[in-house]
Length: 202
Image (tube, one colour):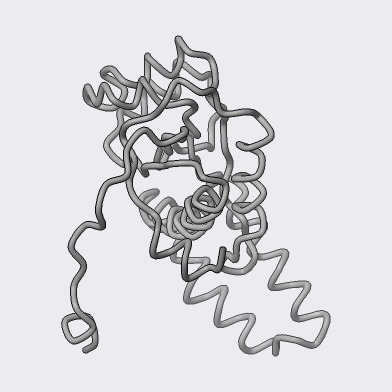
């Protein structure tokens, strides 16, 4: 399967068979995320694999505003951002590039002044938003790898972060940005409408 075929065949799947999703398959998705690009090579994504049936079913309740179909997935991946490590890892990359002669000192300073320091000193949402943008890249790679593995996925953004964090005992500094339901598809929906090239070229 080519990348183009995976892009064209990806669908949001909300009906799954009872076939379990093996840990090996889930780790294939995590590996796709691990290899994804990120700003300053910061790699701020962190993941929790949810495979216990009672936990999956719980996620289909108030944790996702009653999206009951989530509770029937084969697994759910809790997709987090590590805002505590994001700035440190970004600065480490900039320093390494500068020391290797691949980034001028002037440009390195500009990145720090115009990108990292505003995120560090601004409202927490600014830092989280920057980290979440990188997570989105990784999640896209996971979804395309899932197509190749004949798995179905859906990206879930409507969630109640506080109760998910409490249930899973996630450490401070990790923000739950999204969930990804994963399973063996029990449906093959048509492609949703897409805007034309003329509409998206500006």
